[in-house]
Length: 130
Image (cartoon, rainbow, N blue to C red; front, top):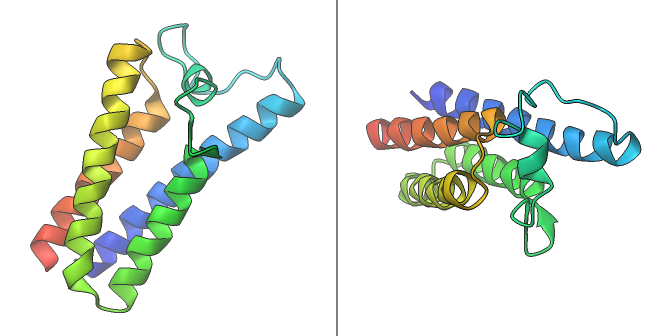
């Protein structure tokens, strides 16, 4: 089950990295259309470029990468006492972001939803493992 946590954390970090790629790519070429931009109501770009795309002035993608590295580090060092807390925090924060996405931005972001699913899986894996 520990491998499941590593795999989920790696997927989460890759998805977070993709959000950063999109942000930087769109800064260079504003005409670029991301694969996850399907319509005006189903747009990753719209989500990432909203006022909610940053926390404390830092892109949520960077926070995501840091979060998944912390999760992997906690598993590596066997800190079961913190893993469950950290994954629960991730799910609660994902719920906050999902609320903003669906009710404030009235948008659906494929990458964001994939990240929410990864965070739920991390909590399940942590619960089963520790």
